[in-house]
Image (cartoon, rainbow, N blue to C red; front, side, top):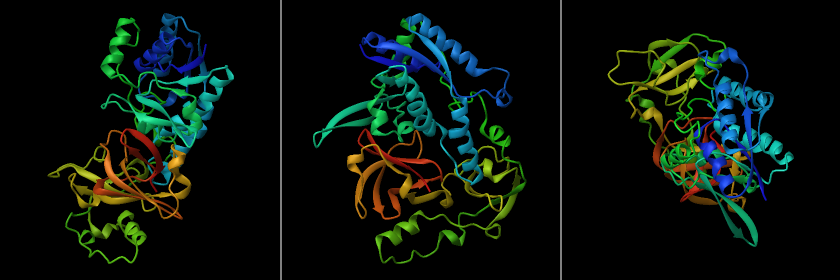
Length: 395
């Protein structure tokens, strides 16, 4: 009998995952990961992780499976939280959920599970795992979840073959309503529970308040750039090579305060991110203001009016060589090669037609249509149909 350790989070998805594995004849063990215990930063006096671990325990009792809590807050602090602060400080926007999966759930947590004699680790992610043979070797595929509204393959875009080989995704074939129905039939305490929002670890923390503990507030200017600014109408140069064109398409415009007008003040450029429109506190504009650039060195935020402002759009992005990651190692591009893919630059974004261009120093991803708010530090992921084959950090 194969042994599976399920990461029980206290939510409905992982609860149903545990039940389905049990039904399939696995020996199931439930583990709850405690990733955070600094109560000074939760917003309300609710203590979400206590409530969640309690729900996880009740589910384990209902299913009659062994259950324990593992405290990973130290590793979490070091691998996720410290990394997030240092990225925000540099003016980049990290994705804690992608990192949490790569560094915690499918690494630290997986090692604990394997030390308990587990054959697999299972989570309540909406994605599927495939197996194919390439040149006589077994290769694992990360496939989108069957529920289009809920597909979470993007969050697992940094997993390796090794991690996938030991992973199971029991609810990947189901839709959210089906999962809730199973939970209700089984009378699981989590059946009606709302989907968790916010950072994957801290419970109900608003990001700026979380960041303010480490990153000092300092007042700076909010500058508005007119959409007809000459910087958007520059003649496109003629390029002598493909790489020159890609460098041009992917580079960010360097704004200066003289290019626009002062429309307000902010409390720190490092709290803000490209494409953001809430939290600026500038009123009286005909359309919402969107952030088109932040400069943490000069502590300035540049904004544009409306979601179609030219400052939001770019046709290409760059990924440093060391940050290019292939789940399907057999598909890795050699220097000078290109590949047509479907790609997304954030969770929930519909897939976009794109081409990968691998060069000596890294990879350019060029899109058929211009993309809004390509953001440094976020992950670009690329797919063949419903298979996620690789990803990388936008530089």
